[in-house]
Image (cartoon, rainbow, N blue to C red; front, side, top):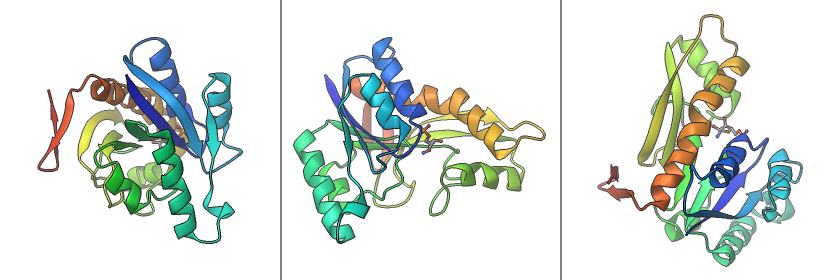
Length: 207
Ligand code: GRF
């Protein structure tokens, strides 16, 4: 049984896709042991509550320094001891100590086809604004392992999504979520739970 902890900051639609996937068995052999948010008002925490999943709020704002937060965040994660940490719209930088401790056991969903429209400053609607500004005809989403860079870890899955003439950032965001994010994040978790995903020389190998 793959024990996963899901980190969220906002509406939690990707979390909901994971909850639903476990429920309808498109994600097998997996248990969500906790949902962690830096934002006590995140609707994602309500989604966890409705699903009977432990919700935890821990925010840098509660601590005297970022180092104090990082230590507390890592201590909580070590206490939970998940097999996999899933970042589903989590807007807090993951401490390097946590990346070391959970090497290749942290995954993130990013709403573009990395290496396009990613890195520092590319989050939420800004990703889709960048894609529309550049005039790309295809965008999409990426699930990748988290390393010490920003959106730079080994890529696990990607799924393309067409950009439609006249799309607004919000309309494109919704399509990328519906047609890509909510599909490949559960898929990636299911493959990891089945032991089908390994990393060799910083490349993901699918068995
Ligand atoms: C998603 O677009 C995800 O790709 C990005 O943040 C957003 C989170 O949305 N990392 P939600 O909270 O899962 O609805």
